[in-house]
Image 1: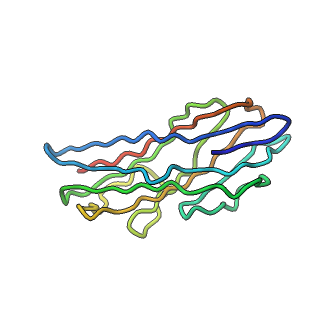
Image 2 (image 1 turned 90 degrees about the vertical axis):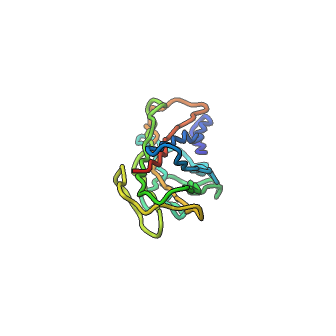
Image 3 (image 1 turned 30 degrees about the horizontal axis):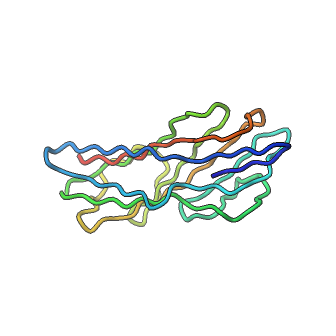
Length: 161
């Protein structure tokens, strides 16, 4: 959630759209959302876009250019399992559903390695024991963005090869 204050309140909530694909007949990948990315309340910049970065560790990133009004934020976290040993591909994209608001610069942490270009191909399978996927992103609210509730959406897909 991102709440910008200017002379009005502005709220952004990230909604996750999970996609799961299985190429092999009978194979199953399960994605469980532990928590979606959550942004803090911030003071909106006048005259330029407001930028807030939450990294995959759940910390504020260096390119954040706004005054934070709370410390209620977190990285996105997902738990995936598979009933096969086939390599997997991970893709992570913004659905771009809100005008003048961008969700970009995604970073994904999987099996102790950080990725920033997508799709990620040929990764080790999480198996039945499962693995966490941690995600971070940058949200940029254009100075002309309108007030009110915003529901930014992104897609996380995991596909077996």
